Length: 402
Image (cartoon, rainbow, N blue to C red; front, side, top):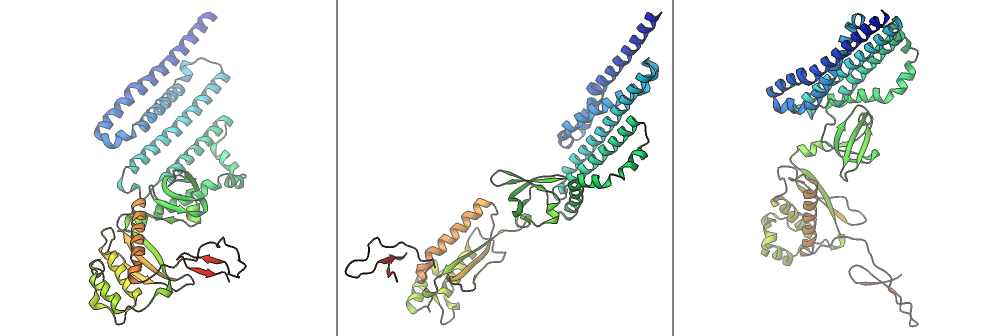
């Protein structure tokens, strides 16, 4: 008789376990994938990209159904002792809560994936909010699991958190700050994926590739990755180049220092030379020149005309050539304009092309670019005849040492 009872118990247990396996395989391999295929056919471009997330949701949903079936049929299918029954029920309830938490996490991820496919998703990223929802979900699941294990009400567990609130705030300080910062970033559209940002304090200068709850990842232009705390984008200062990328051009602001000793009034010979040179005459309107005019004034008008006709300069934006405050290293002439091509390499090449050309035409206007005196002492020592050593400077003239 005992053998018969034992055999019946084992048979019932085997049937229960086999039933759980059948339910899991049916829902995991047949029912849920079939539903996924039907839904995918409705919108293959959008839902097809979410296939990995949907597969993960199917697996977790199948596990939850098995947990529900196990708890619902436990008393009638699994003949075990009272203590064993409590242990198995506790394990089943714990697994059920865990699966429910993961299912909610998958649903939130799928919702985030659908949102990221929208046109305005790049402008208003919600990755930080998604992580907050997942964090809250798992915290609730953890509280429920602890209450089941301790056989206490969840309110009892929550009341205990009041005593350790300070410790909780300390442990989750970065998470709380990141959550608040994520809301401000999303609401004010401070940063989004693909933005070129520059944060000097962290050595970050590149493209934003990830906006998380705690950190923001920036791929620098040398392909290194810099990680920045999310809340620092709100608490500190950073430069976002999005405005430049969305505008009609990228600013060029370069200056050329002119030797003030080379500035003079333009004589008839210089004016005649410019009037007869087609390349110069094209950019300088000779009939609008003041009388008298300096050679520097002619150069400024030429430089501005040259920039206005340049095919790679956006003339609809601000364009000017101006004099700055004279300094001890010459008179700065600033060229202010905007490049139509905002790509880094093309932008740098255009700047170099403009500066090369303007430096090359300076001698035509009898102007010299200022540069500090450079050279080295002559190797010849002081001779018995009393000749002093000389210094060779950049223009090959010789100056006495004293």
